Image (cartoon, rainbow, N blue to C red; front, side, top):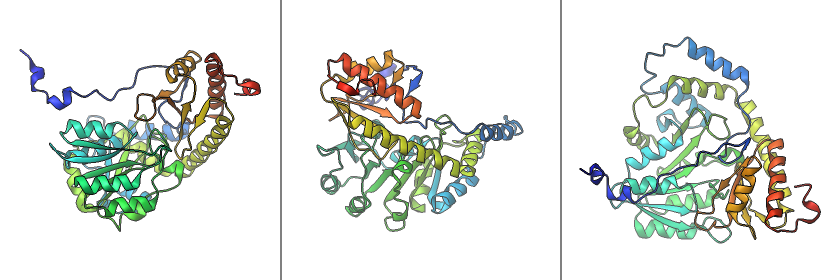
Length: 368
């Protein structure tokens, strides 16, 4: 017997999206918020969860949360869909648009889940490289959309893992280049200060994805939401699993919305630390720190091996992300912005790792 023969051949050819299970005192590898929610807020969530019967299902459709997210975003409740992280909503949108032979335009390098889900569903991922300066090649994206009659184009802005931003002007060019859906993943938009939500009224083929996992410190509870034209949201909702948001997650999401000013202060501190890190890394020999509008920085190691530097950092208790297997990033690692103490420890460990690689860091060695 060979039950695997019933698995789609296109799936068996793919590699799963994985992250090696490594632990370290300083984990700056997953683009999380380095500060947790205040304890008083967490206790408030716990108190509400304790009085709620756990033997009962959550809301079939989390309507109250959807309305709160719509008010927060400045969009209509009918055009808002809440999900178990934005990844669930990416999957739902592709499930209702992608089938065998469907073309999806995806810039690269970017979040690998976009292409993986497209190919699992039998679609064709049309990969459009970034420019040599790791910017979006809007002309090439527009051309790919038009020539292929692509059903969907997915752009992450700021982009993971490069920190690249798509301008509002270029986003509108994409939206006008055919009736295919344009998905803008705004997982990191709070750190860049720009959003495409004001364009939703003008472009019925535009979809905006957001998450509470990054700036809003809820990576452990998974809250995402999708904003689009109500007609399109009704179709995507058909692929949403029932009871997709448990009551604990919903309660925590309300708490976050109530504490948004405190969380905005966290964002300000992360951006401040990002700029400080960029300045320090700019003075370090053998390293190129790419500009970023996210809560992470892409580092190009000009002379050292990314894997060797990754392992050297790990031995010193600092876990970053080795992205050298991504297209165009063969000499790169990615580091999330941590607390000031974590960032100092990373800089020191990086200086040591580069010293081991034989680079002359001069007077900067002790400082970095």
